[in-house]
Length: 457
Image (cartoon, rainbow, N blue to C red; front, side):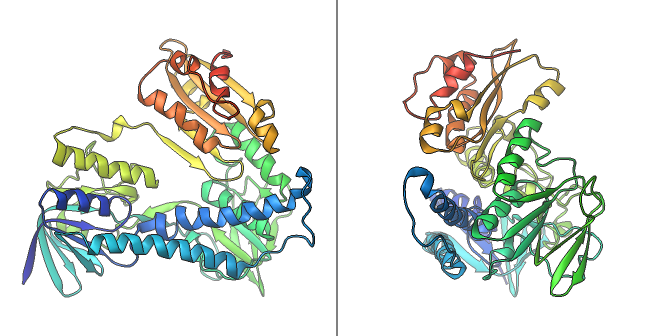
């Protein structure tokens, strides 16, 4: 027997539960299906657990630097990984339980546990249950890519998910991938006490960022003892019991790195391969992402895809914004589109990188005439006072329109200070609006108007 609902939501990540709240609040009956853990990637294997670990690693780092501030810490610093992981698990469990409690107590929402698969464009099967609805929303997220590299099937490897379950401290963590996930884990485990080597296939780290940003981040991390091998064209893995050997074809250095653990951090893929999408006729691209339009509708009427599975953003904030777009279009009569939002994200190393809009390289590649403002954190009072002067601030402005095209704030508080730039760009105000705005002293943000007053070709 088929149980009918007004809407079915597959996945309890960042978009699904909030959408369920809006739909039930509008008087609709909703079935929400979750196959494993409430809260999705962010709560269980992404933002919340990793940033909790980063917080522990930062405390350890600051304690080692205590003498620089005239503070004496007798006996040195030691890491209790069991306690570190217990704290992380408690934070995650509390967040996950909060999402589940909210959904189970939501009037009009029926929660199903199990793996959802399409039977038709309007029907979904969960184990022995068959449910149907005129509206179906996919919020199924993604997972780490396991690259098809030689030897990967013959050695134990870690992904961002399985590394979080590791109780012991790796003596030597080798990381394949010099981008956001790899660098955050690399610094974190280096501060916990592991030897860390990052192996990157490209000629430099963070290919998405301007070269000056990437090089400064590498300089900071090398200063903490992390080793980097870039230009690794042919990576392979082999067992060297009890260790793992990674063969790399780099421009310089030894051709082989031997470590105790290897983390694969080369990208992510959508969880769309086992949903029976073909039975509903839902189109996907060559990478498996569900193809959606500007309002997140699939090619099948009545079916939407939100969050990481649609390929339109891989962040918690883009997933939540997907919910806002869908809810506004369906319930508020307020047409909102994916193209309305401005790309923004953070790299949560220490110091963090706050990013919005185009890089300088991207802007020039698009033929824009630009002026650039840049200031080292050594010239930012707040950074000097805190003894955290690594990094710089950089803002790119269009000469012809006076619009801010993008910014990179790499430095203490950069992940927060960048929001003033994001807001100005969202308001479509000229850079002079922000330049003439008074900020609070002493902060990092107060130097942004100064930078905008020092723009150079």
